[in-house]
Image (cartoon, rainbow, N blue to C red; front, side):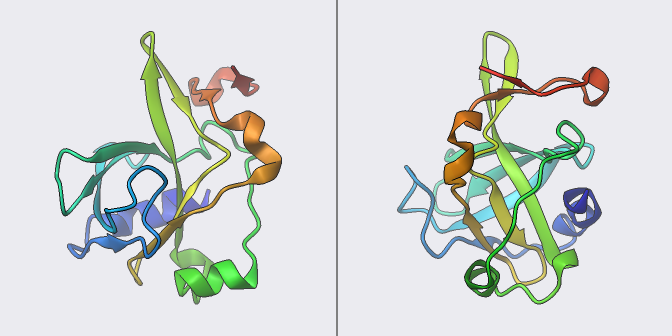
Length: 144
């Protein structure tokens, strides 16, 4: 549940997060502000360059308690991550037919105090690009 612990630190810092390589489909955008939408579970990430460029994000851990990732030394270096406690992991959210889906195959990783971020593509989880978000007490993960 690391994302929940670090989520509270997101709002206390006004500097945007820097994505050195941009994001797939948003290559011209490198700086994003991140803020809460509701509780420390749902977030809105907006480009500082073009405010209408925004992504809905979610802390996946309350919905998928068994969800884990492994960071390589190279990825830790890319994030300039010194302590695991500084890491915030969120996943993108899409809405279709009044249902919420998240992409567990491509989490966004944030070094909260360092304001560095990148999107990690998990090749072994490409079948989890669109997973139904259900209430945390709902039990097993559902994929579509």
